[in-house]
Image (cartoon, rainbow over all chains, first blue to last red; front, top):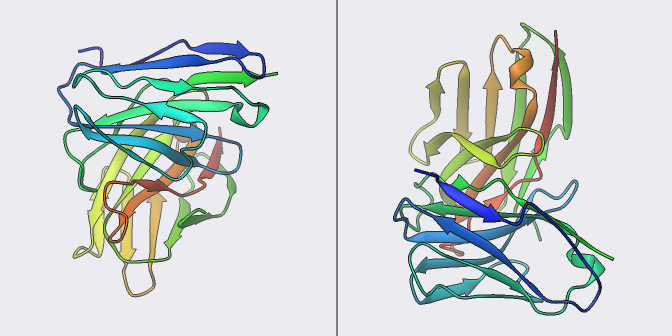
Length: 114
Length: 112
C-alpha cells in the first residue's frame, strides 16, 4: 500500500494563477480531508469529504474548491492564488467520519505564492 | 478560530527526561487523539483516548483526559533523541461532527 500520496511536493505560483493539488489513497477510506499548516497555528481544516460525491467546508474554505468523484481521489483546487495561501497543505484519510478513527496523512505539498 | 490550545509551545529536554504537554479544548468532545509530526513530514497517529477513559498507555506514552476541565496531557517517559518532533492533539467537538480540529502543537527537542 502506498497510503496517502500527494503531488506535487513543492510548487511556486504567481498571484492569480490557479492549480490543483492532487491527493490519492489506496486504503479504500471513506473520509478524506485537506488541511493547511501555517507556523504557530497547527492544522486548519479546509474541506472534507465523507464519501464519493459528498464534500463539505471546514474552517478555512475560501479560495479553495474540492470534488470527490471517486473514493480514491480528493483534489484541492486553488481558484486564484493569493500570497495568503502560501502554506504547507496536507491531505488525510480515514476509515470513517467519527473522531475514533485514526487519520493517515500524506507527506504534504509546500506551496509558495509570490 | 482554533478550538484547541496546547502548552507549552516549545519544550527542550535531555535524553532520559520526561516530557509533558497539555491540550485544552472549549466544548464537549467524544474522543481525543494525539499525533506526532517530524520535521518536514506528515502527521502520524500516536494514541486515542475516549471520553469515558481517564488514562491510557502505549509504550512510553501516557495520555490522560479530564473532561470536567476540558483538558488532556501527553507524557513521554525516558525521552530519546528520536522523540524530537511536534506533537498535536486533535478532536471533534459534538457540535461540529466530521471536522477534526487540531491544537497549535508543542515542539519538543530532545538533546543527547
